[in-house]
Amino acid sequence: MNLFSIVLDRINKTIEWIVSGMLIVMVIVVFLQVIFRFIIMSSLSWSEELARYLLVWISFLGASIGVKRKAHIGVEAVTTFLPERIKKVVALIATLSAMVFFVVVIIWGYKILDVVSNQVSPAMEINMSIPYSALLVSGILMFLYSIENFVNIIKALKGGGIA
Image (cartoon, rainbow, N blue to C red; front, side, top):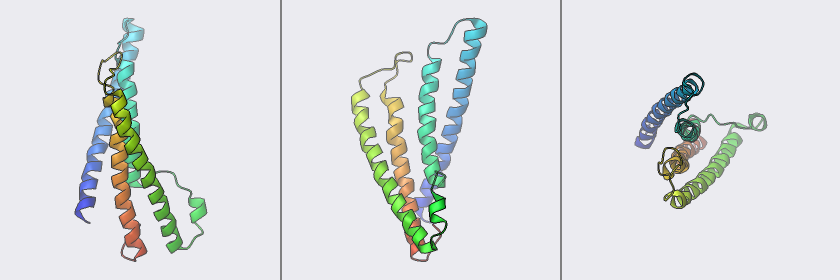
């Protein structure tokens, strides 16, 4: 295992912990909102906004974890009957296509930060670049994980590893 893979594994473990923490916070905030709204009869002005932004971050970071684990949906019915070498070539093409998509996500994620950097959220009054930066961060992570996957597929094609 090379240094790049070791670093990405540690980053992914950290992201998994962060996502778990965000999910816990989101559940607590939504539960508190229900308690405040229906029992105390006074709702929290910031809770729905925080839950929404946490959900965005959880979704995008979760997608990057899926890329790292190779857990995203695939069309295995098509590749099941192909020879092993052709399967790896198809996986290589799919990974390259995903990498192109992730570059687009990174570019547009960066561009949108410029647009929203002067805006604040209505309830919490935080800079809107915080929730929108989920696009950029997850795009970078997915691209890095795809590079690792691409290298592993190339090694497998050369006969030196598992894709």
